Every structure is written in structure tokens, then in C-alpha cells.
Length: 228
Ligand code: PGA
Image 1 (cartoon, rainbow, N blue to C red):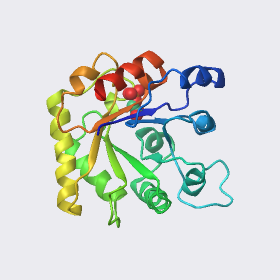
Image 2: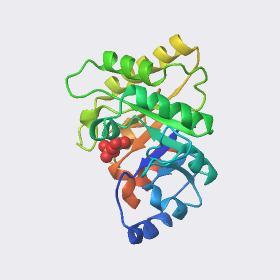
Image 3: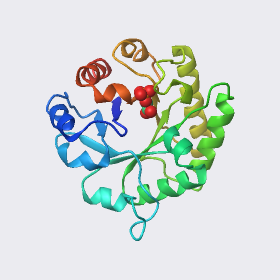
């Protein structure tokens, strides 16, 4: 089963959310990750958050913990997103701690990895994956989202061949080190116009959708094509 995950980032007002929730064609493959404040408005679908901390509770002003998310029925957390790495100085070591805390509270982790423009793709992915997955033995609750940083929010995307090659590289690497299969999603400028073509890439297990997930018609089209 393919997954369609909406990363709404820090977008929409309460009025806009109320209008949005009733109009999305949810199914079992759809996961919405709204701004955490709005989680209670998403009742009929799988829900995730866009970040969680690596402590269970305590004096960490502004953070939310996997234990708290689990207590609200939240199933997923996005970790290692390039915006967290770039604007909040998250390193692979921090992401590794966050993953361990999330997994120990039974959250499913969407781990984002990807290269900046001009960087060596395989080198970056190997370093991000080995760092953020260090010391883990069970990867069954981890999904990888391959998101080239230069493709996020820019309208630029790699060719289907490049996405297929990179997805396979990630799957092979995980197989080699962990002797397990893993789901790999593609993310970065997925929209209603390119989804038909992206959906033909046979080894991609779904999509992490940013900007387009905040627009009802656009996200419904992406769900329709991916889940047909
Ligand atoms: P985008 O974002 O679809 O707006 O490019 C994807 C993401 O950041 O997860």
C-alpha cells in the first residue's frame, strides 16, 4: 500500500483548517501532519506531527514529546526534515535521539533525508542514514522520505530515473546494514500536475507532500492518482 503524507508545515488559520478537514478524501493510505495545534480537528484520518522532542516530559518549553503524542492517538512523527536541520540546527545525532524516543512510544517515524544542490547524493544519504539510524536494531516503524533539498518548495524535481536510482540506493543500503526492507517515499514539489508521472516510478512507496497538501483540490488529486 502506498502512502500519501501531507506535511502542512506552519500553514493555515483555524478557519482555513475547518474548511479543509471536511473536504479531503481520506483513505487508509493518507496521513495528515498539520501544525500540532490543529491535530484535534483531524478525526477521521491518520495523523502525524512535524517534529517531536527526545525527552519524555519535563522543563522543555515549547517542545512536545512522543509520549504526549501517543496519548492523543497520533501515529506518526516527521523527523530530520531539512527545514529542521537548516533553521533549528538539528544534527544527525539529535535526530537519532528523537527517533529512539519516538520509537519507544510506538510512533511511526518518517525520516527525511536528501542532498543540497550540487552535493554528492549517495555520500549525503549514507552519512545521514548511518548517523540518524545509529544503534537502532528494529526499523519496522521507520519510513524514509527522500527529499532533495533543492526540490523542496521550488517546483524543480529530479527526473524519474534519478528518483528511481536514489530510492533503490536507499533500499539497498538499508538491506545491507539492517537486513530488512524499508518503505521509501519521494518528497519535493509533488503537485497535481506531476503526480501521474511520479506515480509510475515502481520502487517509490508513496509521497511526502508539502505545499500541495494545504490545497484541497490539489491534495485530493494527488490522493486519487496515488491510491487508484
Ligand atoms: P513541498 O515540500 O512539497 O512544498 O516541496 C515537501 C516537504 O518539505 O516535505
